Every structure is written in structure tokens, then in C-alpha cells.
Image 1 (cartoon, rainbow, N blue to C red):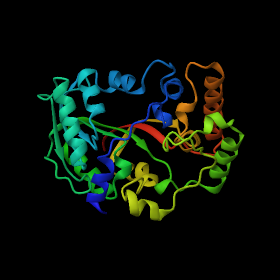
Image 2: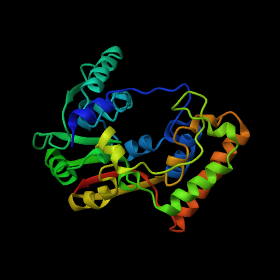
Image 3: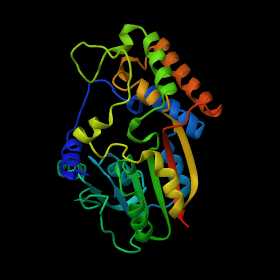
Image 4: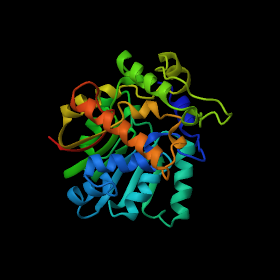
Length: 298
């Protein structure tokens, strides 16, 4: 895997004036919360913290920390007193360090550059390990999980929030057709391309060819479809909370912000789509592509 290409790709911060992804949209977040916690206003991580980290971890490990938003939240919300955070992107680590300093957290969060495929970790060091949208970028899953297992103290927990859908985003033809039928039924105003910012529209979805990943980001969802089964080889999964994405993740990619969270009709459309997704999961027609997972050592 070309680590330099991956570092460069994830060192770029792409910002849009409105949410481009479903996980950024406030209505989608509320729908996820409702599904995962039973309350639209209760974030899943806060509920998990209360159950599994009633006292802050003295020292936590954050893997694939990116620009550091989760780490700063974790310190402020008593997930941990101190965090050692690692990411492959030099630029992301630099920006995360600057942000921590600006928020007065530099003495509590230590950032370093490391490739998680080959990272070396000390034995029995951490009370908690966090991997937030990180593990689906790892090719050497077995090696990473072994190292995490070794670096956890007795009774430590491993918390993941991950894309666990098909590797390389290769959705089945049936799911792809369903997404495209929904897109084609949406009024034009909902299909404005928020990535391009040029007035163009997204009219269909096609899984990217494998060549795209090799040319742009070789790490993206490289073995995402194998995460859960590989995780079970090394850990006991004590909490598994899938929260959707089988349709909405790709359907709303690049267009999520066209749905106004203050507009009743727009909220209704998103709610209906989320309901459809959940019931298709229950029927076994599709699978959730996102899940929060709590693990302990076997």
C-alpha cells in the first residue's frame, strides 16, 4: 500500500457550506441516535461512555485520529484523562496538534505520525482504545488487532465506530439499482452536487472501479467487509450497534445538505428513507454498513 499517497489524500480537509455526507446531516444524526439509543437527542457515544467508561480512562489510545475532533471531544466529555493519538497523515497530525493547543488540551493529547498497518505499541499500556472511522482503512487487520490486544491493560475496552460494508464500496447490483431508483425519483433540487460546487447534479450512483482506489486512496475500505469476522478472532464483542447506511450512505453522498433540517417535507423524506432502510435490514434484504462496537479481550 502506498502510504505516502494515503497520507496526502487524508491530509486534505474538504469543507462544504452544507453537509455533503449523511453522517454530517443533523436530521440523519437524530435518526441514527433514535435507532441506536431510543432517543433522537442522545448520542450513541455518550450512552456507551456511561455504560462502559463511568470513570474516565487514565490513558487512552486513539488510532486513525485524523484532524483530532474525536480526541478533543473525548477529553472534554470525560472519556479519558489523557490520550495518545496516531494518524498516518503528517498534515492531519499537525492540524490536530494546533487545534488541541488552541483549545488548551495540548498537555492531555499527544499526537504522533504512524502507519497503523505496522505501528508498534507498548505492552499493557492503555485503559481504552478508540478507533473512529479508522479500521476500514487498514489492510493488515490481523496484525493491528494483535497489537491492540497486547497494548490493552486487563479489563480495558476497545471502542470502534466503523464502516463495515462491502470492501471497496462494491455494493451489490440490487442495492445499487435501489439507490439509483430512489435518486431518479428525487426532485432536481435535492440532487445538486455539493462536492462539485459548479451547479451540476448527481443523477445516479455507480460503485467506483477498483482502479479509482489504487489511483487516489489505496486504503479506502480495503478490507471493510472483513472487519467484524476478523475482530471476533481476537476480541469478545460485548456491544454491537449497527445504525444503517446500507442505502443512505451512498444515496446521500454529495447531496445530503440539499435536505433542509428546518423544512418539514425534507425531514419527512429523510425519515421515510431511514425507515425503509431499517426495515429492509430487518427483512435481511440489505445489511447495515455502519456500526458502533465495544470489545474486550477474549
